[in-house]
Amino acid sequence: MSGPQPRQAWDAAAYDEKHAFVWQLAADLLELLAPRAGERILDLGCGTGHLTRRIADAGAEVVGLDIDTGMIEQARRHYPGLRFERGDAADFSVAEPYDAIFSNAALHWVRDAEAAVRCIARALRPGGRFVAEFGGRGNVASVLAAVQATLAERGARAIPSPWYYPSVGEYAALLERHGLEVRQASLFDRPTPLEGGEQGLRDWITVFGRDFLAGAGDEREAFLGGVEARLRPAAFRDGRWIIDYRRIRVAAVRVA
Image (tube, rainbow, N blue to C red):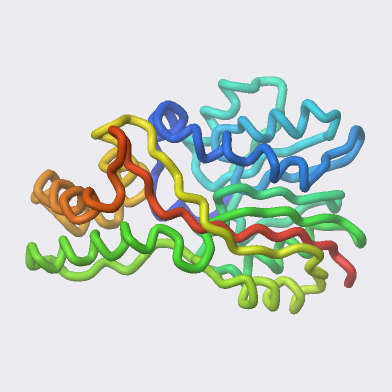
């Protein structure tokens, strides 16, 4: 499936090595999905495929879809027996509708949320389930504030957030406009420890915040040091960084 390139090219190996919490924290989201043997399920924004494999372990026929070529290649190396395809969450179609669509930690990267929900609704059979979790309103607010303050201090222009962080009401209304009846929806705090000790915050920014690094130009190290200095009093405890994740979680059913 062709489509636009992702906003940033991912380092899939670094993602797996240093940010495994992204998929490891999704165990209860899989319980909400409750995949069953014989179901056809799409893992939308599958990354390196670890949750795709867990869905397959339940006996479902699963396809992993991601826009990033490196992620897809890494997923295929991890799980050569599973099916992974490159595709854009805001511009995909399927030959046969799915029983369920699952997405973890991906949809906040899709700025055209309406287009993504339109595709999701069309790809589900009537009665099909949509279960997703991603960054919600206020996610990593302290990091964003520190990034922008550090850029301003260094005379660089502000960099728009690359992420879409909706409220529950905003996202539920969007789903319902496209025939998806919301059965569960919540926004909750999840303070998240980063891996890597002292290095953890700059590793996180390097993988997830490349737009900000680009804005810092040749002053990358000074920029990262400035962000760390601003966040350290509140976010560095017992030898590790803990940042203010907030997640939105939804479960919906296609009714129209």
